[in-house]
Image (cartoon, rainbow, N blue to C red; front, top):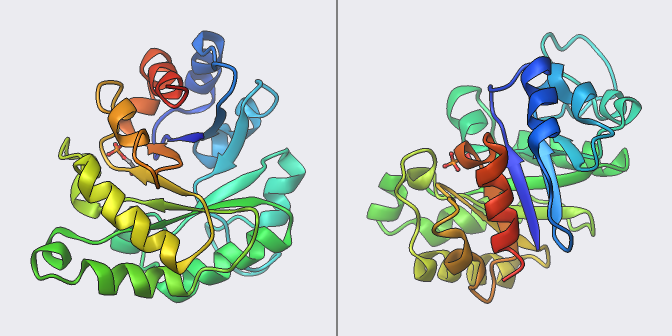
Length: 225
Ligand code: PGA
């Protein structure tokens, strides 16, 4: 089981230090924390695996605002999220750029959590399977690649997918790709056990509830049940 915390644009360096001073990860579960770029250096070396929230596909170049895999490696960061729906929605991320970012990260020796998931409209119009097939098809086959199924309608909304909906999507993704599949979208301490108990759910990608050391620990403990 893998539990990853995606902090999004929360916690600068001093709040990151405070989080790790208070966070006591349980044994027996792989825990990953994904702070903003400026906080990565403070997170490395605190007993938990550290991933970035994005990574560029080139080693260096004229790409204002971007960070390369090599730079993350130099810092002791062990991986990156790619293709989060907020990147797709607000920053023009496409299936093609997600694939390029994932490949570059894997080539540099990093782990990757690649996010996929349908919007509310896509689910309502019966296109969930088509969307997941398209998003998964571009992802590289690699032992360090993990997929996160994050239905867009469940992110930050408190509208968690039911365990049955999650299981159905995870089973489809696993029929298309050999990677472990995390569930993400309003995972909280009180729904984490049930979600992670599903056969094809291999862990969780947690947003809001990963910001508090106690609630994030509780979700990590739920992965052990
Ligand atoms: P949430 O975010 O847990 O706050 O819904 C999940 C994510 O975006 O990874």
